[in-house]
Structure formats: structure tokens, C-alpha cells
Image (cartoon, rainbow, N blue to C red; front, side, top):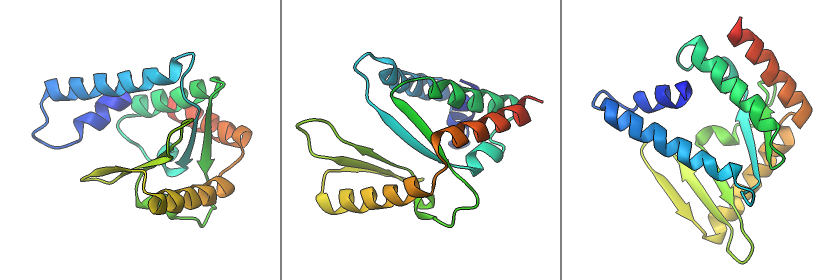
Length: 158
């Protein structure tokens, strides 16, 4: 929760403590969907920089990388790291989420600093799928990703 509190608290100087707590609670609630018996399968690709660039204190970073390690124990969650050595920059333009469900059209959620968008338009969905494949192909395998995350956990806890 330290990480969420830090991120939610850096949205701007006018953010009140109550708004920070509401945002933290909303993020925590959204994460609970992953714990459901019938929850979604999630594949995440993280840029190596998110493991090494300090976001908040060392305690915040330690909590965050430990959380990533705990996620790896979940059978429907797969976390991969895109290493610094990769030349692929396609994911650096902003976060995105691809979503698909039986009987539903594939959708994509695109996020930037000032806005977000959800679309099922086949053109953008196809483009984001293609970019995801590029990232996935460059990312470290699951075991190597977990090893790197573990190394960062040691760095942030020492």
C-alpha cells in the first residue's frame, strides 16, 4: 500500500489526504478481482526501469518488488521484465491493457498522463496486439524475470 499511497499522492499539489485515501482504496479494490476463483488471466510486461528507478522511499520500492514476487505465485498471473538491453521502445509511449473474454470483442485500454481511452475498434486493437507481441518477444522469460525482480528486492531491502 505504500506504493499506491505514494503514486496517488503525487498527482498534484491540490490532492487532499482524503482523495489520496479514496484513490488507494479504489486501486486495492480493483486488484481484488485477480484473487477471485474465476478471475482473469493477466500477463504483465514491465520495463526494467520500474524496478531500478526509485519511486518514493526504499521502503516503497521494497514493498513493490516483494508484491511482484508474490504475484508470481498466482497461477493466472505472469510478470515479465523488458530488459534495458532491449531496443524495443513500443511500450514507452504509455500504458495499455488488452482485454478479451468469450463472446465479447477484444478491447484495448490506452492511458496517458492526461487521459485514457477504451476501444473495441479493430484497427487500434490490432495495432496494440502487434505492439504487445513485440514487447513479449523481447521480454525476459518468466524465470529470468523473477530472478531479476528478486535481485531488485535484495537491493531495496538492504
